Image: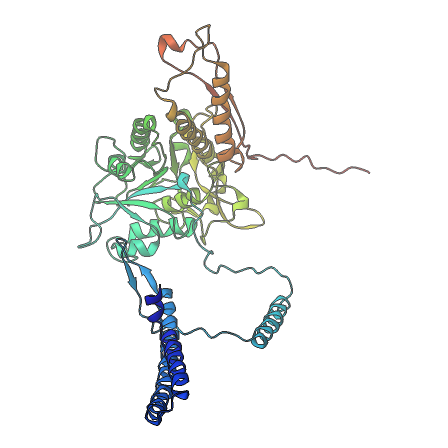
Length: 508
C-alpha cells in the first residue's frame, strides 16, 4: 500500500518536503556553518523542484481533460458493423458540446414557449382538399366490361400481325401497333376509335385483325383459331365480343341482310356454349351488314334460342357496316344491369345515326318498331331531344326467355361467377353429418350466409340486382351421391321500357 502511494507525485512531493524540514531542524541546532550552507542549497533546489512538479501536474490535468472529451466524442460515433464487430466512425462532424449556463437555459425555454405559441396561432382550423386534375375522360370499365373485337385488317411490318391477339388501352395504343386512320387498317381504326369514344381511354380492349377473305362466321367458328385464340389469350376475361368483316361489293344478301349473318349467329352461340361451363361466357355483337332496307325480309330472331348473341343494324357514317365498336364501348363502361339504350346515360357521341342500308334512321322511323320486334338493335331519336340512342339490347331468343336482353345475360352470369368463387373452396371439403345422416343445419346456415353476403355486397349494393334468395335443402343425402345442391333466386332490376300516361281534361 505504501509503495502505491509513493507512485503519486503529490505524495512524493509531501515526503520530500517533510524530509527537508527534519534536516533543517537538525541543521538549525548544529554549530557547523558548512552544514547550514548545504541546507540552504538543498532548500533552494527543493523550491525549484516544487515549481517544476506543479507545472507538470497542471499539464497532466489539462491533457486528461482533453482526452476525456475526445473519448466521449468517439463513443458517440461508436457503430456496430455487420457481423458483430465494432468500429469508431470519424469524429470530424461531431462537435464538442458546450455546457449551457443557467441564464442560457432560461433564455432557450422562453424562446421555445414563444415559438410554440406562434405555431398554434398560425392558421384557423380548416379542411384542405387537393384537386385531382387527371380524372376526366378516364374509363369506368370494370372486370365485367372487358371487351374484344375481331376486325378486317392487314399486318404491319414490325407491329401488329394477322390472327394475333393484341391488347390496347387507348386509340394511341392502337396507333402504336400500326392501326391508323389512313392506310390499310382504317376500317379497324374506325371501330376502335368509336369504342373509346364511349368507353374512354384506359379501358381494356383485346383485338385481332384478320384478312379480308375471313368471313364473320369464320371468326366465330369454335373450330378455327380466331375467337378461340382471342378468348384463350385473355385467359377468359373477355365478357363482350364484337365481330365485323368490312363489307365488300357486290354484297351477297339473304333474308334482307348479309348472307353470312344467320350462320354467324349460330356459330357465336355454339362458341360461347363451349366456354360457358368454364365460366368464360361473353355476350357477342354481330355486324348486321348490308341491310337491304326491307324489314319484312329479315329473319325474326325472337324465335331463336341464342341468348349470347345480338345483331346490330346501325352505324354513324352511312356505310353498310354496323358500329360494333360504339355499342361495345357503351356496354363496357356501364354496369351489367344497365341497358345501352338508357336515355339518362346520354346521347351517343355521334352527329348522325344510320341503318346499314345507308339510310338515316330519322327517315326510317316507320320501320323502327318492326326491326325492334324482330330482335335487332338499331338507333333512334326522340322528339324534343337532341342526339341518337340505341333502341334496346335484345338477344336472339323468345320474349318468354328470361335472358332476352344483354343486361339480363350479363347479370345472371355475373351472379354465377360470384357463386362459383364462393363455393370453389368447398370442393372435396369434409362436411360434418348429423345423427340422421344429413348435413349439419349450422353448416347449411353458414353457406347460405356466405353466398348471400357476397352477392349483396357485389351486386345488390351496386344496384345491379334488387334482391337474392338462397336455399340449401337440409335433407340432402350427400353420403350417397357426394353432391351438394342449392337454389339461388335473383330478383333483377326493372326497366321502364314502356311508360303509359293516361292524360286528359278534368274539372278540379
